Image 1 (cartoon, rainbow, N blue to C red):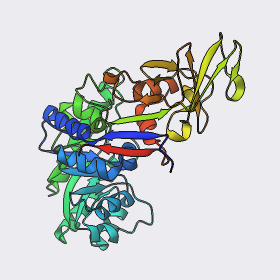
Image 2: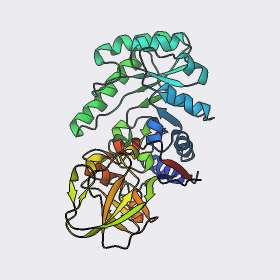
Image 3: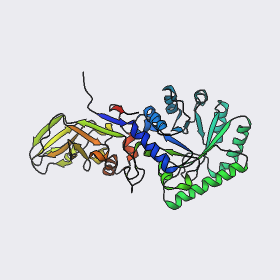
Image 4: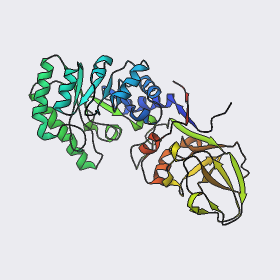
Amino acid sequence: MTGPIRVARIDLDAIARNVETLRSRVGTERAMIVVKADGYGHGAIAAARAGLAGGADWIGVADLGEALELRGAGVTAPVLAWLHSSAEDFTVAAEAGIDVGVSSIVQLDRAVAAGVASVHLKIDTGLARNGAQPSDWPEFFEHAVRAAAKGVRIRGLFSHIANAGVEADAAQVAAFERALALAESLGLEFELRHLAASASALRIPEARFDMVRFGLASYGLSPFADETGSELGLTPALELSSEVIAVRRVPADTGVSYGYRYRTPRETTLALVPLGYEDCLPRAASLSAHLLVGDELAPVAGSIAMDQLVVDVGDRPVKVGDRVVAFGDPATGAPTMDSWADAAGTINYEVTTRLGRRVERHYTGG
């Protein structure tokens, strides 16, 4: 029997508390927890249930495959999926009672033909990605009016903010309001108007409307560079840990790992940890990141490999079997996911969503 050497400990109560905290702070009538990308690496089904326990009314996913996974697990709460292939079979959405976000007349027609009962109209307010462009809004909305006359529930109007600065974000809110006014002038009535995700929900009150979509912040991570999750009153729900599996004493000027990007500056002890970039630790963080070995931080020594990395623990009496934490709750002394993102020159979203499948998820709470 083998024991796990890569463990993600996920605190479902932390997710529930984070959603409760966010709901209280934002104050909208409705709130959605977004669990796309396998719940940002935390497990979509478990995260969805925890978010609902914390007061979320809706669940958001990118595509219908993710939505069907929730339904297959017995999750009955309202689910919205908004990113579709050119050959998407909307029949499965109709059969499973999944709300569909549509970005074009073609998608709307196909959803209606498939028997989808409830749709949300996706518009582009300035991100230049998914959603109907402003020049298409009149025809798009008129088509939606005709669909509503046939019994289709046009439940929502939504878009997404670029987080590109105060002026740019304000322009997107204004564009959304113009689209809303146009749609309502043509006879559409929306139960849900939603524009804000975590960042804009927290900092742009004008973007909140009827519902906000909490993604990253639900998991205790900050969407901001100038404010941590802890400062937002949130708790990281995920801790990635392992153990020391080999220890060696080496002389000064010993080359470590691929490319010898690190040479020991003195006689020192090196500890081998079976975590690598397949487990979400970015190779780009190789010469900057730290791990918690026992109760002290130790720097990564040399290149992070696919399956393993080396830390320089100096003269500490580290031994095989000692616990190692890559990231977790800073209140425990662990490095944060943000520190890894900073070390790699990326964002915490990318780190958390890259958690590999060989990492065992252990859930607590919930």
